[in-house]
Amino acid sequence: MRIELGRLTEQPLEASEDIDAGKWDLDSFDVKFIKNIHIDCKFRRSGKDVFAHCSVLTHRLITCSRCLGKYEQEVSQDFNLSYRVSLRSDYLEIDSDLREEVLLNFPMKVLCKPDCRGICPRCGVNLNIEECRCKK
Image (cartoon, helix red, strand yellow):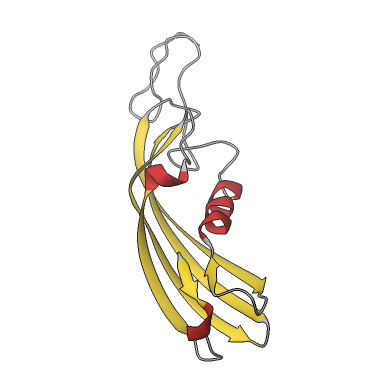
């Protein structure tokens, strides 16, 4: 997202953008971003500082760390960013900062749901779907 600094005042300026998820190179072995990344931002300028409140909506296909199932998730995240701008700058580019925020907010363990029961270590059945038939 690129904003012309001359358009920014103390009054909030709203901007939206859809970015191809592949351009941000976010995928890992257990997370694949699908569809577009939707960004809504409100920019406000105060002297040499620019403040941005951004909402980022992503859709991702995950492989659960416990049950190994594949699930689609919609994740919405809000970020507050601030910048000190120089008089020589005409534009403010924030894509790399938003990408970094999305990456920093990845969970350590990707789960389909917080109370995922995982798989049986003996027979491999998904305990979220059926009961294990192993002898206790």
